[in-house]
Length: 465
Ligand SMILES: Cc1cc2nc3c(=O)[nH]c(=O)nc-3n(C[C@H](O)[C@H](O)[C@H](O)COP(=O)(O)OP(=O)(O)OC[C@H]3O[C@@H](n4cnc5c(N)ncnc54)[C@H](O)[C@@H]3O)c2cc1C
Image (cartoon, rainbow, N blue to C red):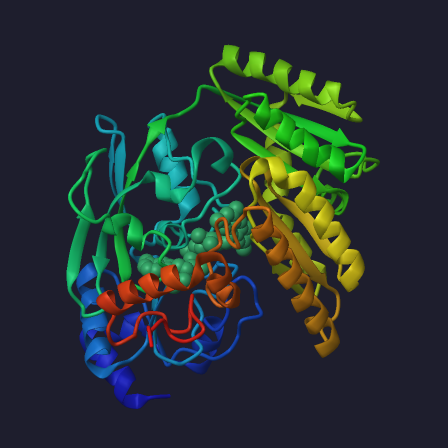
Protein backbone atom coordinates (compact mmCIF):
# COMPACT_ATOMS: atom_id res chain seq x y z
CA UNK A 1 0.00 0.00 0.00
CA UNK A 2 1.21 3.50 -0.83
CA UNK A 3 1.02 5.14 2.64
CA UNK A 4 1.69 8.67 1.36
CA UNK A 5 -1.11 8.42 -1.21
CA UNK A 6 -3.57 7.01 1.32
CA UNK A 7 -2.76 9.79 3.82
CA UNK A 8 -3.06 12.53 1.17
CA UNK A 9 -6.43 11.28 -0.08
CA UNK A 10 -7.88 10.90 3.43
CA UNK A 11 -6.73 14.39 4.32
CA UNK A 12 -8.51 15.78 1.28
CA UNK A 13 -11.91 14.06 1.44
CA UNK A 14 -12.10 12.24 4.76
CA UNK A 15 -10.92 8.76 5.74
CA UNK A 16 -14.44 7.31 5.53
CA UNK A 17 -14.39 7.98 1.76
CA UNK A 18 -11.10 6.25 0.97
CA UNK A 19 -10.36 2.52 0.80
CA UNK A 20 -6.91 1.00 0.60
CA UNK A 21 -7.31 -2.44 2.20
CA UNK A 22 -6.14 -5.29 -0.02
CA UNK A 23 -9.59 -6.93 0.03
CA UNK A 24 -11.27 -3.70 -1.08
CA UNK A 25 -8.78 -3.18 -3.89
CA UNK A 26 -9.32 -6.77 -5.03
CA UNK A 27 -13.10 -6.18 -5.16
CA UNK A 28 -12.49 -3.33 -7.63
CA UNK A 29 -10.04 -5.23 -9.83
CA UNK A 30 -12.62 -6.54 -12.28
CA UNK A 31 -15.79 -5.51 -14.08
CA UNK A 32 -18.70 -7.81 -15.04
CA UNK A 33 -16.51 -9.71 -17.52
CA UNK A 34 -14.40 -11.10 -14.65
CA UNK A 35 -11.50 -11.59 -17.05
CA UNK A 36 -9.79 -8.23 -17.36
CA UNK A 37 -8.07 -8.54 -14.00
CA UNK A 38 -4.73 -7.07 -15.03
CA UNK A 39 -3.92 -5.14 -11.87
CA UNK A 40 -5.39 -3.24 -8.93
CA UNK A 41 -5.88 0.41 -8.10
CA UNK A 42 -3.61 1.85 -5.38
CA UNK A 43 -6.64 3.41 -3.70
CA UNK A 44 -10.40 3.61 -4.11
CA UNK A 45 -12.09 6.95 -3.43
CA UNK A 46 -15.86 7.37 -2.98
CA UNK A 47 -16.58 11.07 -3.53
CA UNK A 48 -19.79 12.66 -2.23
CA UNK A 49 -19.60 15.96 -4.08
CA UNK A 50 -18.21 17.49 -7.25
CA UNK A 51 -15.71 19.38 -5.07
CA UNK A 52 -14.39 16.04 -3.79
CA UNK A 53 -13.94 14.86 -7.37
CA UNK A 54 -12.22 18.10 -8.42
CA UNK A 55 -9.94 17.97 -5.38
CA UNK A 56 -8.87 14.37 -6.07
CA UNK A 57 -8.44 14.78 -9.83
CA UNK A 58 -6.47 18.02 -9.31
CA UNK A 59 -4.21 16.20 -6.82
CA UNK A 60 -3.72 13.28 -9.27
CA UNK A 61 -2.99 15.67 -12.13
CA UNK A 62 -0.16 17.41 -10.26
CA UNK A 63 1.48 14.07 -9.56
CA UNK A 64 0.66 12.27 -12.84
CA UNK A 65 -1.35 9.58 -11.02
CA UNK A 66 -3.87 7.60 -13.15
CA UNK A 67 -7.57 8.19 -12.38
CA UNK A 68 -10.13 5.50 -13.24
CA UNK A 69 -13.79 6.56 -12.99
CA UNK A 70 -16.22 3.77 -12.17
CA UNK A 71 -19.99 3.47 -11.87
CA UNK A 72 -21.28 0.02 -10.90
CA UNK A 73 -18.50 -1.90 -12.67
CA UNK A 74 -21.13 -3.68 -14.78
CA UNK A 75 -19.24 -2.92 -18.00
CA UNK A 76 -18.45 -5.71 -20.43
CA UNK A 77 -15.23 -4.37 -21.95
CA UNK A 78 -12.84 -3.96 -19.00
CA UNK A 79 -13.31 -0.16 -19.03
CA UNK A 80 -13.51 0.48 -15.29
CA UNK A 81 -10.58 -1.71 -14.25
CA UNK A 82 -7.09 -0.57 -13.41
CA UNK A 83 -4.05 -2.07 -15.06
CA UNK A 84 -1.56 0.52 -13.78
CA UNK A 85 -2.51 1.26 -10.18
CA UNK A 86 -3.82 4.77 -9.64
CA UNK A 87 -6.90 6.18 -7.96
CA UNK A 88 -10.21 4.50 -8.74
CA UNK A 89 -13.14 6.90 -8.33
CA UNK A 90 -16.25 4.94 -7.33
CA UNK A 91 -19.06 7.37 -8.20
CA UNK A 92 -21.94 5.43 -6.64
CA UNK A 93 -22.37 7.70 -3.60
CA UNK A 94 -23.14 10.69 -5.83
CA UNK A 95 -26.63 9.36 -6.40
CA UNK A 96 -29.21 12.12 -5.96
CA UNK A 97 -31.95 12.75 -8.49
CA UNK A 98 -31.96 16.54 -8.26
CA UNK A 99 -34.91 17.49 -10.44
CA UNK A 100 -37.63 15.93 -12.58
CA UNK A 101 -39.14 18.77 -14.56
CA UNK A 102 -42.59 17.91 -15.97
CA UNK A 103 -42.93 21.32 -17.62
CA UNK A 104 -39.69 20.93 -19.56
CA UNK A 105 -39.54 17.12 -19.96
CA UNK A 106 -36.04 17.01 -18.46
CA UNK A 107 -34.33 15.58 -15.41
CA UNK A 108 -31.11 16.40 -13.59
CA UNK A 109 -29.31 13.68 -11.67
CA UNK A 110 -25.95 12.93 -10.18
CA UNK A 111 -23.80 10.46 -12.02
CA UNK A 112 -24.08 7.53 -9.58
CA UNK A 113 -27.87 7.13 -9.73
CA UNK A 114 -28.80 3.51 -10.46
CA UNK A 115 -30.71 3.42 -13.73
CA UNK A 116 -33.68 1.31 -12.51
CA UNK A 117 -34.20 3.76 -9.61
CA UNK A 118 -34.11 6.67 -12.06
CA UNK A 119 -36.68 4.88 -14.29
CA UNK A 120 -39.00 4.38 -11.30
CA UNK A 121 -38.90 8.02 -10.21
CA UNK A 122 -39.43 9.32 -13.74
CA UNK A 123 -42.26 6.88 -14.47
CA UNK A 124 -44.06 7.89 -11.27
CA UNK A 125 -44.53 11.25 -13.00
CA UNK A 126 -45.87 9.51 -16.15
CA UNK A 127 -42.61 10.43 -17.91
CA UNK A 128 -40.25 8.11 -19.75
CA UNK A 129 -36.46 7.74 -20.01
CA UNK A 130 -36.09 5.04 -22.69
CA UNK A 131 -32.43 3.81 -22.48
CA UNK A 132 -32.59 0.33 -20.93
CA UNK A 133 -29.31 -1.56 -20.69
CA UNK A 134 -30.19 -4.97 -19.31
CA UNK A 135 -27.97 -4.29 -16.31
CA UNK A 136 -30.34 -1.50 -15.22
CA UNK A 137 -30.77 -2.95 -11.72
CA UNK A 138 -27.16 -2.00 -10.96
CA UNK A 139 -25.61 0.19 -13.67
CA UNK A 140 -25.33 3.95 -13.17
CA UNK A 141 -26.42 6.89 -15.28
CA UNK A 142 -22.77 8.08 -15.50
CA UNK A 143 -21.60 4.64 -16.66
CA UNK A 144 -24.36 4.64 -19.28
CA UNK A 145 -23.35 8.06 -20.58
CA UNK A 146 -19.68 7.09 -20.62
CA UNK A 147 -20.32 3.95 -22.69
CA UNK A 148 -23.19 5.41 -24.75
CA UNK A 149 -25.19 2.44 -23.47
CA UNK A 150 -28.14 1.00 -25.35
CA UNK A 151 -30.55 -1.84 -24.71
CA UNK A 152 -33.58 -3.50 -26.31
CA UNK A 153 -35.49 -0.22 -26.63
CA UNK A 154 -32.75 1.14 -28.95
CA UNK A 155 -34.76 -0.10 -31.95
CA UNK A 156 -37.44 2.54 -31.41
CA UNK A 157 -35.87 5.08 -29.09
CA UNK A 158 -32.12 5.09 -29.78
CA UNK A 159 -29.48 4.93 -27.07
CA UNK A 160 -28.27 7.00 -24.11
CA UNK A 161 -26.59 9.55 -26.38
CA UNK A 162 -29.98 10.55 -27.79
CA UNK A 163 -31.23 11.64 -24.34
CA UNK A 164 -28.31 13.62 -22.93
CA UNK A 165 -28.75 17.40 -23.02
CA UNK A 166 -25.96 18.48 -20.72
CA UNK A 167 -23.29 17.36 -18.30
CA UNK A 168 -21.21 18.56 -15.41
CA UNK A 169 -17.66 17.32 -15.91
CA UNK A 170 -14.45 17.45 -13.90
CA UNK A 171 -11.66 17.80 -16.44
CA UNK A 172 -8.31 16.03 -16.01
CA UNK A 173 -6.70 19.17 -14.50
CA UNK A 174 -9.37 19.31 -11.78
CA UNK A 175 -11.42 22.17 -13.27
CA UNK A 176 -15.21 21.87 -13.48
CA UNK A 177 -17.24 22.62 -16.62
CA UNK A 178 -20.96 22.61 -17.43
CA UNK A 179 -21.75 21.47 -20.98
CA UNK A 180 -25.10 21.88 -22.77
CA UNK A 181 -28.06 22.61 -20.49
CA UNK A 182 -31.77 22.05 -20.06
CA UNK A 183 -32.76 23.42 -23.49
CA UNK A 184 -33.80 20.94 -26.11
CA UNK A 185 -31.76 22.88 -28.69
CA UNK A 186 -28.32 24.42 -28.45
CA UNK A 187 -25.96 25.35 -31.25
CA UNK A 188 -22.90 26.97 -29.77
CA UNK A 189 -19.67 25.64 -31.19
CA UNK A 190 -18.41 22.13 -30.62
CA UNK A 191 -20.72 19.65 -28.93
CA UNK A 192 -18.66 18.67 -25.88
CA UNK A 193 -21.69 16.99 -24.27
CA UNK A 194 -21.71 14.35 -26.96
CA UNK A 195 -17.94 14.13 -27.11
CA UNK A 196 -18.00 13.13 -23.45
CA UNK A 197 -20.83 10.68 -24.20
CA UNK A 198 -19.06 7.42 -25.01
CA UNK A 199 -15.62 8.67 -23.90
CA UNK A 200 -15.28 5.81 -21.36
CA UNK A 201 -13.65 7.90 -18.65
CA UNK A 202 -10.72 8.93 -20.87
CA UNK A 203 -11.54 12.66 -21.10
CA UNK A 204 -12.81 13.53 -17.62
CA UNK A 205 -15.18 12.52 -14.84
CA UNK A 206 -18.91 13.05 -15.36
CA UNK A 207 -20.53 14.22 -12.13
CA UNK A 208 -23.99 15.38 -13.20
CA UNK A 209 -26.30 14.51 -16.11
CA UNK A 210 -29.20 16.44 -17.67
CA UNK A 211 -31.51 14.12 -19.60
CA UNK A 212 -34.36 14.62 -22.01
CA UNK A 213 -37.60 12.77 -21.16
CA UNK A 214 -40.62 11.61 -23.18
CA UNK A 215 -44.25 11.01 -22.21
CA UNK A 216 -44.73 7.49 -20.79
CA UNK A 217 -46.33 5.26 -23.45
CA UNK A 218 -49.93 4.41 -22.51
CA UNK A 219 -49.79 0.70 -23.21
CA UNK A 220 -47.52 -2.14 -24.31
CA UNK A 221 -47.87 -5.64 -25.65
CA UNK A 222 -45.46 -8.57 -25.82
CA UNK A 223 -45.33 -11.09 -28.67
CA UNK A 224 -43.26 -14.28 -28.67
CA UNK A 225 -42.41 -15.74 -32.07
CA UNK A 226 -40.99 -19.24 -32.40
CA UNK A 227 -39.02 -19.91 -35.59
CA UNK A 228 -38.10 -23.14 -37.36
CA UNK A 229 -34.54 -22.02 -38.16
CA UNK A 230 -32.10 -19.29 -37.18
CA UNK A 231 -32.28 -17.96 -40.76
CA UNK A 232 -36.06 -17.69 -40.51
CA UNK A 233 -35.82 -15.70 -37.27
CA UNK A 234 -33.13 -13.40 -38.67
CA UNK A 235 -35.19 -12.88 -41.83
CA UNK A 236 -38.31 -12.15 -39.77
CA UNK A 237 -36.43 -9.31 -38.05
CA UNK A 238 -35.58 -7.66 -41.39
CA UNK A 239 -39.11 -8.25 -42.66
CA UNK A 240 -40.72 -6.62 -39.60
CA UNK A 241 -38.44 -3.59 -39.95
CA UNK A 242 -38.81 -3.30 -43.73
CA UNK A 243 -42.61 -3.38 -43.34
CA UNK A 244 -42.33 -0.14 -41.42
CA UNK A 245 -43.20 -1.63 -38.02
CA UNK A 246 -41.13 -0.12 -35.21
CA UNK A 247 -41.41 -2.28 -32.08
CA UNK A 248 -40.17 -0.85 -28.79
CA UNK A 249 -38.11 -4.03 -28.39
CA UNK A 250 -37.18 -6.75 -30.86
CA UNK A 251 -34.81 -9.34 -29.45
CA UNK A 252 -33.33 -12.35 -31.24
CA UNK A 253 -32.71 -15.35 -28.98
CA UNK A 254 -31.10 -18.65 -29.91
CA UNK A 255 -32.58 -21.95 -28.78
CA UNK A 256 -29.71 -22.31 -26.26
CA UNK A 257 -30.53 -18.89 -24.80
CA UNK A 258 -34.22 -19.73 -24.42
CA UNK A 259 -33.41 -23.12 -22.86
CA UNK A 260 -31.32 -21.30 -20.26
CA UNK A 261 -33.95 -18.61 -19.67
CA UNK A 262 -36.48 -21.40 -19.11
CA UNK A 263 -34.87 -22.02 -15.71
CA UNK A 264 -36.56 -18.75 -14.68
CA UNK A 265 -39.85 -19.19 -16.56
CA UNK A 266 -42.93 -20.93 -15.27
CA UNK A 267 -44.32 -22.45 -17.39
CA UNK A 268 -41.20 -22.71 -19.57
CA UNK A 269 -41.31 -22.00 -23.30
CA UNK A 270 -41.43 -25.14 -25.46
CA UNK A 271 -37.98 -25.50 -26.99
CA UNK A 272 -38.70 -27.07 -30.35
CA UNK A 273 -37.79 -24.03 -32.42
CA UNK A 274 -34.22 -23.10 -33.45
CA UNK A 275 -34.60 -19.42 -32.60
CA UNK A 276 -37.11 -17.03 -30.98
CA UNK A 277 -38.06 -13.40 -31.24
CA UNK A 278 -39.23 -11.49 -28.19
CA UNK A 279 -41.12 -8.43 -29.36
CA UNK A 280 -42.67 -5.55 -27.46
CA UNK A 281 -44.91 -2.90 -29.01
CA UNK A 282 -45.77 0.31 -27.18
CA UNK A 283 -47.98 3.32 -27.78
CA UNK A 284 -51.73 3.91 -27.55
CA UNK A 285 -53.94 0.79 -27.07
CA UNK A 286 -55.32 1.24 -30.59
CA UNK A 287 -51.88 1.61 -32.14
CA UNK A 288 -50.43 -1.50 -30.50
CA UNK A 289 -53.53 -3.52 -31.44
CA UNK A 290 -53.07 -2.57 -35.07
CA UNK A 291 -49.28 -3.13 -34.98
CA UNK A 292 -49.60 -6.54 -33.35
CA UNK A 293 -51.85 -7.66 -36.22
CA UNK A 294 -49.24 -6.43 -38.69
CA UNK A 295 -46.42 -8.30 -36.87
CA UNK A 296 -48.63 -11.41 -36.92
CA UNK A 297 -49.26 -11.07 -40.65
CA UNK A 298 -45.54 -10.66 -41.45
CA UNK A 299 -44.62 -13.72 -39.34
CA UNK A 300 -47.46 -15.83 -40.73
CA UNK A 301 -46.34 -15.04 -44.25
CA UNK A 302 -42.95 -16.53 -43.31
CA UNK A 303 -44.65 -19.66 -41.88
CA UNK A 304 -43.00 -19.38 -38.47
CA UNK A 305 -43.84 -22.16 -35.98
CA UNK A 306 -45.82 -20.09 -33.50
CA UNK A 307 -46.86 -16.51 -32.79
CA UNK A 308 -48.12 -15.87 -29.28
CA UNK A 309 -49.56 -12.54 -28.21
CA UNK A 310 -49.09 -12.39 -24.45
CA UNK A 311 -52.03 -10.63 -22.83
CA UNK A 312 -51.10 -11.26 -19.22
CA UNK A 313 -48.85 -8.42 -17.96
CA UNK A 314 -47.12 -10.56 -15.32
CA UNK A 315 -46.33 -13.26 -17.83
CA UNK A 316 -44.98 -10.68 -20.29
CA UNK A 317 -42.79 -9.16 -17.56
CA UNK A 318 -41.40 -12.62 -16.72
CA UNK A 319 -40.11 -13.05 -20.30
CA UNK A 320 -38.33 -9.70 -20.22
CA UNK A 321 -36.90 -10.40 -16.77
CA UNK A 322 -35.53 -13.73 -18.02
CA UNK A 323 -34.11 -11.95 -21.07
CA UNK A 324 -32.23 -9.47 -18.91
CA UNK A 325 -30.82 -12.34 -16.83
CA UNK A 326 -29.23 -14.11 -19.78
CA UNK A 327 -25.64 -13.02 -19.13
CA UNK A 328 -25.68 -13.88 -15.39
CA UNK A 329 -27.27 -17.24 -16.29
CA UNK A 330 -24.44 -17.99 -18.72
CA UNK A 331 -21.83 -16.91 -16.18
CA UNK A 332 -23.36 -19.20 -13.57
CA UNK A 333 -22.13 -22.37 -15.26
CA UNK A 334 -19.40 -21.37 -17.74
CA UNK A 335 -15.77 -20.53 -16.89
CA UNK A 336 -15.62 -17.56 -19.24
CA UNK A 337 -18.00 -15.72 -21.55
CA UNK A 338 -16.80 -13.09 -24.02
CA UNK A 339 -19.75 -11.01 -25.17
CA UNK A 340 -19.09 -9.38 -28.53
CA UNK A 341 -21.08 -6.30 -29.45
CA UNK A 342 -21.01 -6.15 -33.25
CA UNK A 343 -23.76 -4.11 -34.89
CA UNK A 344 -24.77 -4.62 -38.51
CA UNK A 345 -27.34 -2.92 -40.74
CA UNK A 346 -30.62 -4.67 -40.00
CA UNK A 347 -31.11 -6.02 -43.51
CA UNK A 348 -27.74 -7.83 -43.15
CA UNK A 349 -28.69 -9.75 -39.97
CA UNK A 350 -29.51 -13.01 -41.81
CA UNK A 351 -26.04 -13.01 -43.45
CA UNK A 352 -24.38 -12.17 -40.14
CA UNK A 353 -26.10 -14.96 -38.21
CA UNK A 354 -25.21 -17.49 -40.89
CA UNK A 355 -21.58 -16.31 -40.96
CA UNK A 356 -21.27 -16.60 -37.16
CA UNK A 357 -22.61 -20.15 -37.30
CA UNK A 358 -19.95 -20.98 -39.90
CA UNK A 359 -17.22 -19.35 -37.79
CA UNK A 360 -18.29 -21.44 -34.78
CA UNK A 361 -18.08 -24.62 -36.86
CA UNK A 362 -14.73 -23.79 -38.47
CA UNK A 363 -12.98 -22.62 -35.28
CA UNK A 364 -14.52 -25.26 -32.98
CA UNK A 365 -15.68 -22.56 -30.56
CA UNK A 366 -19.17 -22.54 -28.99
CA UNK A 367 -20.79 -19.23 -29.95
CA UNK A 368 -24.26 -18.23 -28.77
CA UNK A 369 -25.99 -15.59 -30.88
CA UNK A 370 -28.58 -13.42 -29.25
CA UNK A 371 -29.05 -9.70 -29.28
CA UNK A 372 -30.98 -6.53 -29.81
CA UNK A 373 -31.70 -7.56 -33.39
CA UNK A 374 -34.23 -4.78 -33.93
CA UNK A 375 -31.39 -2.25 -34.03
CA UNK A 376 -28.86 -4.64 -35.59
CA UNK A 377 -26.87 -4.96 -32.34
CA UNK A 378 -26.07 -8.66 -32.10
CA UNK A 379 -24.13 -10.14 -29.21
CA UNK A 380 -22.31 -13.23 -30.45
CA UNK A 381 -20.94 -14.68 -27.23
CA UNK A 382 -17.95 -16.96 -26.96
CA UNK A 383 -18.91 -19.62 -24.43
CA UNK A 384 -15.98 -21.28 -22.67
CA UNK A 385 -16.54 -24.25 -20.39
CA UNK A 386 -12.78 -24.50 -19.86
CA UNK A 387 -9.92 -22.06 -20.08
CA UNK A 388 -6.68 -23.12 -21.72
CA UNK A 389 -4.12 -21.45 -24.02
CA UNK A 390 -5.49 -23.44 -26.93
CA UNK A 391 -9.08 -22.42 -26.16
CA UNK A 392 -8.03 -18.75 -25.84
CA UNK A 393 -6.28 -18.88 -29.22
CA UNK A 394 -9.33 -20.42 -30.88
CA UNK A 395 -11.61 -17.86 -29.23
CA UNK A 396 -9.43 -15.01 -30.44
CA UNK A 397 -9.50 -16.34 -33.99
CA UNK A 398 -13.29 -16.60 -33.82
CA UNK A 399 -13.56 -13.01 -32.51
CA UNK A 400 -11.29 -11.69 -35.28
CA UNK A 401 -13.46 -13.40 -37.88
CA UNK A 402 -16.70 -12.13 -36.32
CA UNK A 403 -15.37 -8.57 -36.25
CA UNK A 404 -14.10 -8.81 -39.84
CA UNK A 405 -17.48 -10.15 -40.96
CA UNK A 406 -19.39 -7.38 -39.14
CA UNK A 407 -17.23 -4.68 -40.72
CA UNK A 408 -17.54 -6.25 -44.17
CA UNK A 409 -21.33 -6.10 -43.83
CA UNK A 410 -21.10 -2.36 -43.13
CA UNK A 411 -21.32 -2.74 -39.34
CA UNK A 412 -19.44 -1.57 -36.27
CA UNK A 413 -17.28 -3.35 -33.67
CA UNK A 414 -19.37 -1.94 -30.81
CA UNK A 415 -23.01 -0.92 -30.65
CA UNK A 416 -23.24 -0.14 -26.94
CA UNK A 417 -20.55 -1.63 -24.67
CA UNK A 418 -17.69 0.61 -25.81
CA UNK A 419 -14.07 -0.34 -26.48
CA UNK A 420 -12.46 -0.53 -23.01
CA UNK A 421 -9.67 -3.07 -23.14
CA UNK A 422 -11.63 -5.66 -25.07
CA UNK A 423 -11.80 -4.10 -28.52
CA UNK A 424 -8.70 -1.86 -28.61
CA UNK A 425 -7.02 -3.92 -31.31
CA UNK A 426 -9.94 -3.38 -33.70
CA UNK A 427 -10.44 0.41 -33.42
CA UNK A 428 -8.02 1.23 -36.23
CA UNK A 429 -9.73 -1.26 -38.53
CA UNK A 430 -13.08 0.49 -38.17
CA UNK A 431 -12.06 4.13 -37.87
CA UNK A 432 -8.93 4.31 -40.09
CA UNK A 433 -5.68 6.16 -39.37
CA UNK A 434 -6.94 9.71 -39.99
CA UNK A 435 -9.87 9.45 -37.59
CA UNK A 436 -7.80 7.67 -34.93
CA UNK A 437 -5.24 10.50 -35.10
CA UNK A 438 -8.11 13.02 -34.62
CA UNK A 439 -9.32 11.00 -31.61
CA UNK A 440 -5.84 11.15 -30.15
CA UNK A 441 -5.52 14.90 -30.76
CA UNK A 442 -8.78 15.35 -28.81
CA UNK A 443 -7.48 13.14 -26.00
CA UNK A 444 -4.26 15.19 -25.89
CA UNK A 445 -6.22 18.47 -25.74
CA UNK A 446 -8.32 17.25 -22.79
CA UNK A 447 -5.71 15.20 -20.99
CA UNK A 448 -2.14 16.16 -21.94
CA UNK A 449 -0.71 14.19 -19.00
CA UNK A 450 -2.61 11.05 -19.99
CA UNK A 451 -3.93 10.39 -16.47
CA UNK A 452 -7.56 9.62 -17.35
CA UNK A 453 -8.33 5.90 -17.54
CA UNK A 454 -5.04 4.93 -19.21
CA UNK A 455 -4.93 1.76 -21.28
CA UNK A 456 -8.53 2.07 -22.46
CA UNK A 457 -9.66 2.59 -26.09
CA UNK A 458 -6.02 2.62 -27.35
CA UNK A 459 -3.25 0.08 -27.11
CA UNK A 460 -0.62 2.85 -27.07
CA UNK A 461 -2.05 5.28 -24.50
CA UNK A 462 -3.78 7.52 -27.02
CA UNK A 463 -0.87 9.72 -28.06
CA UNK A 464 -0.16 10.70 -31.67
CA UNK A 465 3.49 9.92 -32.35
C1 LIG B 1 -26.19 -8.56 -17.22
C2 LIG B 1 -25.67 -7.39 -18.02
C3 LIG B 1 -26.44 -6.88 -19.03
C4 LIG B 1 -25.98 -5.78 -19.78
N1 LIG B 1 -26.78 -5.29 -20.76
C5 LIG B 1 -26.40 -4.19 -21.44
C6 LIG B 1 -27.26 -3.63 -22.44
O1 LIG B 1 -28.35 -4.12 -22.72
N2 LIG B 1 -26.82 -2.52 -23.08
C7 LIG B 1 -25.61 -1.93 -22.79
O2 LIG B 1 -25.29 -0.92 -23.40
N3 LIG B 1 -24.80 -2.47 -21.87
C8 LIG B 1 -25.14 -3.56 -21.18
N4 LIG B 1 -24.31 -4.09 -20.23
C9 LIG B 1 -22.99 -3.46 -19.99
C10 LIG B 1 -22.96 -2.37 -18.89
O3 LIG B 1 -23.92 -2.60 -17.91
C11 LIG B 1 -23.09 -0.97 -19.49
O4 LIG B 1 -21.92 -0.71 -20.25
C12 LIG B 1 -23.28 0.15 -18.46
O5 LIG B 1 -23.47 1.35 -19.17
C13 LIG B 1 -22.10 0.31 -17.51
O6 LIG B 1 -22.50 1.14 -16.43
P1 LIG B 1 -21.69 1.12 -15.06
O7 LIG B 1 -22.27 2.15 -14.18
O8 LIG B 1 -21.60 -0.24 -14.51
O9 LIG B 1 -20.25 1.61 -15.57
P2 LIG B 1 -18.83 0.93 -15.30
O10 LIG B 1 -18.82 -0.46 -15.80
O11 LIG B 1 -18.41 1.17 -13.92
O12 LIG B 1 -17.93 1.83 -16.27
C14 LIG B 1 -18.04 1.73 -17.68
C15 LIG B 1 -17.12 2.78 -18.32
O13 LIG B 1 -17.60 4.09 -18.02
C16 LIG B 1 -16.61 4.85 -17.33
N5 LIG B 1 -17.32 5.63 -16.30
C17 LIG B 1 -18.22 5.18 -15.39
N6 LIG B 1 -18.71 6.22 -14.66
C18 LIG B 1 -18.10 7.34 -15.14
C19 LIG B 1 -18.17 8.72 -14.80
N7 LIG B 1 -18.97 9.16 -13.84
N8 LIG B 1 -17.40 9.60 -15.49
C20 LIG B 1 -16.59 9.18 -16.49
N9 LIG B 1 -16.47 7.88 -16.84
C21 LIG B 1 -17.21 6.98 -16.17
C22 LIG B 1 -15.64 3.83 -16.77
O14 LIG B 1 -14.36 4.38 -16.61
C23 LIG B 1 -15.68 2.75 -17.83
O15 LIG B 1 -14.84 3.07 -18.90
C24 LIG B 1 -24.71 -5.20 -19.48
C25 LIG B 1 -23.94 -5.73 -18.47
C26 LIG B 1 -24.39 -6.82 -17.74
C27 LIG B 1 -23.53 -7.34 -16.63
